[in-house]
Length: 84
Image (cartoon, rainbow, N blue to C red; front, top):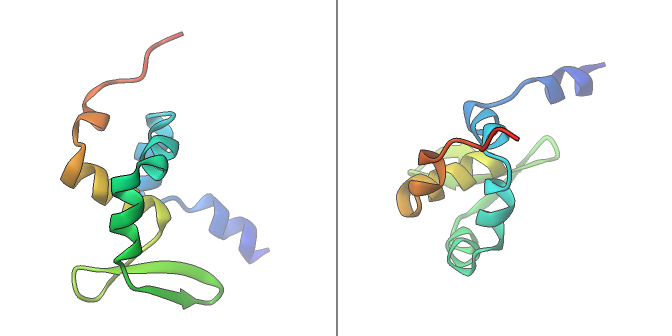
């Protein structure tokens, strides 16, 4: 069951987005992010889509979202999610 094992593996960026509910969806809806992401080359590796950044680094969807947020909207991760 390799797919199940793969789904259990999370990047630090995926974990960070899970800790900040709504950030993933917010960033993906922003016109500035959408335009920026369109400039990134895309490659398919074993059926998974990755974006090429920093020359030769492959990043998944969540890694790209966090990279953009760190560059342009770091405030999105400064606030802790509300309890309740």
